[in-house]
Image (cartoon, helix red, strand yellow):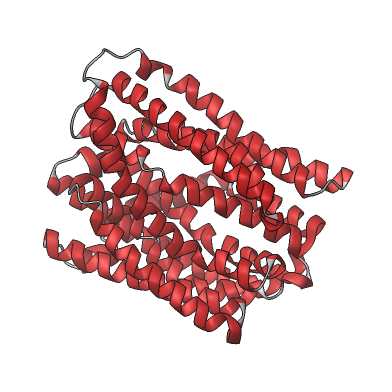
Length: 411
C-alpha cells in the first residue's frame, strides 16, 4: 500500500507540478480533518468492549448519527466550495466525506474484535484503487486535477461498499439496549475523542493549512513531499497498535500496560533505524525522483524525522489512556498544548525560514506531546522508562525469526 501511494505521489508531482500536488494535498488534509473529528469509532469500541452493548443497536445508532452529521456537513462544504473560488476543492471533499466517515466509524467494531484484516482491507481499497485509476489517466491521457480528485473519491466509495458487506454480521446480532441511551453515550464519548483527534490532527497538520494560506499551494506541494517521506515511518508502527488494540482495550490492567510498553519499544526501534536510512537517501532520491522543483523537500524531511520518531509511540499511549483508563481527555490536553506550540512556532518561523519553519514547528510539537504522555503513563502505571525504549531479549525473537525466514527464502 505504501509503495503504491508513493508511486502515485510521484506521478502527481511529475504531471501536475507543485501547484497540482499542493491542491491535492489540501483536499486530502481537509477530508482528514473532517474524519478525525468523528469520534464514533473509539466510542463504538468503548461501548462494545467495556459496556457490552448490543452490536446491532450500536450499528443503528452509528447510522443515525452519521446520516444527520453528513447532511449538515455536505451542505456546509458545498456552499463554501461554490462561493469561495480558492476553495473549489471542497466540493470534492463533500462528495468523499460521507463514505469516508462511514468507513472510519465501522472500524470501531472491527478493532474491538481484533479483526485487523478488515481494517487493512478498508485501507487498501481506499488508497490503492484511486492510484490504479489516476496514474494511467494522468501519465497517458494527461488529465488534470479534476480527474485526479474524482479518482480519489472512488476509493472511498469502494471502501464503503466493502465495509457495508462486512457489517452485515453485526446487523444480524441479537437485539439489546434501547437506542436512546446509546446515542447519548456515543455522542458524549465520541465528542471527547473527536475533539482530541482534531487537536491531534492540528498538531500534525496545522502547518499544512498555514503554509497553504501564507505561502500558497506551490509551497505546500513541495512541503507535502517532505511530509509524505517522513510519515512513511508511521506505517511501521500503526499495524502494531491496531493488532494490539484488543489487548489494550479489553485486557486487564497488567496486560494492557505490557502491550502498550511493547508497542512503544518496537516503535522506537523500527522508526529510528528507518529514519537513519531515510536521512541518508533523501538528498539523493528526491531531486531525482520528484524533480528539481521539489528539492526543498529534503530539508523538510530531515527536520521532521526526530519528531516523527518520538510521535510514532503516541498511538499506543493514546489507546491506553482512552480505552483502558477511559480518560480521552488526557490525550486531548496533551495534544491541545502541543498544537498551540506548533501553531505559534509555525507563524513565527514561516516568514523567515519558509517551509523549513513549519517542519521545525511540527517536530518540536511531536516531541513535546510524546514526552508529556510518556511521563504521565509511567506515573500512572509505575512503569520504568527503560521498558518503553529498550528492547529486551524476548523482543528480539520475532526479528530473528524474520531474518531466518528471509535467509531461507533467498536461498
